[in-house]
Amino acid sequence: MRKKIHNHFAYYIVLSAILFLGFFAIQKTSNLEDRMLFISIITFCYVLFGIIHHLLNHKFNAKIMLEYVLIGCLGISLIFFILKGGLGI
Amino acid sequence: MKKKLSGFFYPHDSNNYRARLLHLDSLLVIILALIISSFLLTGIKTAFPSVLGISTGMSIDQLLALTNQKRIENGLTPLALNSQLSVAAENKASDMFSKNYWAHNSPDGKTPWDFISSAGYSYAYAGENLARGFNNSDQVINAWMASPEHRQNMLSSNYKNIGFAIRPGNLTGEDTVLVVEMFGTGIAIAQNAPEIASNNTIEENYAQQIQEEVQKTEEVPKPQEIQNPTLAQNSNQEQNIAGLQTKPLLNSKALSKNIVLIVIYILIFTLLVDVIIIEKRKVIRFVGHNLDHVLFLIFILSLVFLFTKGFIL
Image 1 (cartoon, rainbow over the protein chains, first blue to last red):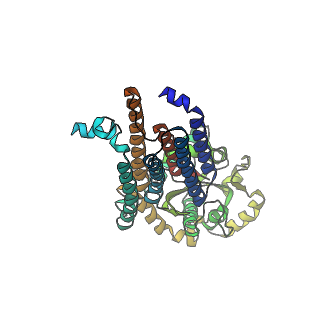
Image 2 (image 1 turned 45 degrees about the horizontal axis):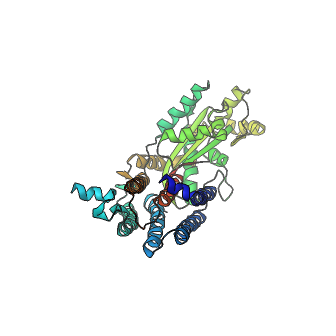
Image 3 (image 1 turned 90 degrees about the horizontal axis):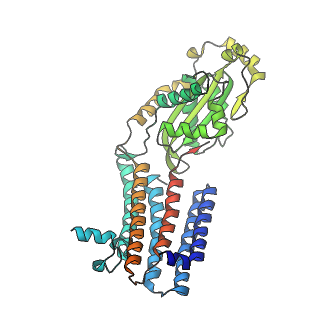
């Protein structure tokens, strides 16, 4: 696993930077609509970045693409659950 | 049974070397379950508010005791709970909910001092602290103490009286519990202690107006005897506070937060166990990077804490 991380070090750094900057931007925004827009953009970037990385460096198939899309949807549905079910927004 | 259960979290030949929880159909089931249950929670909240709703472990007694404890620790005299300041705080909270704003001044320009004056409290010094979205009194007091401006209000030697309001409701589209803390020193007290230091945070010093106010107060009866319309609302406000004490069985915010945290922790645990076992066994498979998903779930986890934390103003 250490070798794998080492091989894709730049990829993980860029992905972490996208997520960290995304969180920073969301934290600085107080408007809920803007926050949801940022979350959607970050999720889209995460899915796209994962797919592109697999296209360029690994064997790519529809199942991998679907996995990234589903994990992205899962993240959004977790936030939706907190906002709708918990906070009544 | 044990093998079936472990197959949910551990990769082996029976689950095609991928923890069952991470299979695409399982992820789809979790997504659908979350969406359906969020609507279900909303429905239960509306239909059975006594079962599920916004509640808090806060009380005015606790807030007063903790505020005074902090003051005593810092060598200051404790504040006395004042019914007029509590009425002012209640009126401010009602105004915030009805006009849907999160600010010291209302959209129509009403200041905290207007609420204090209209509650019949003639002040020489006054201040206001606001909080929302906290689960207990300790969290509120600690958050105020951590903020220099709010700390200055709590530890100001200018103040002799205090009033609180704790009100649940929907503010700026979010179900929350609002806490209003009003500080004050009556004109008579301020005149007896003219050496009080000034506080330049959310506090107003009407030193120049004191003489005018004193003349007014000389002409009107004692505060207890003032026929003030805001005091007439006392019974309603007491009912509101009592309503808060008969809190729902389950706190929707805490419940949803705990469910989401459990789901995220289980998924992160499963993803890490899955990748460690596969790397150890050197199994070749074509799936996404687990570490990508872990990083993304940590991002979502951070957002959950961001959305559910309390705010002070």
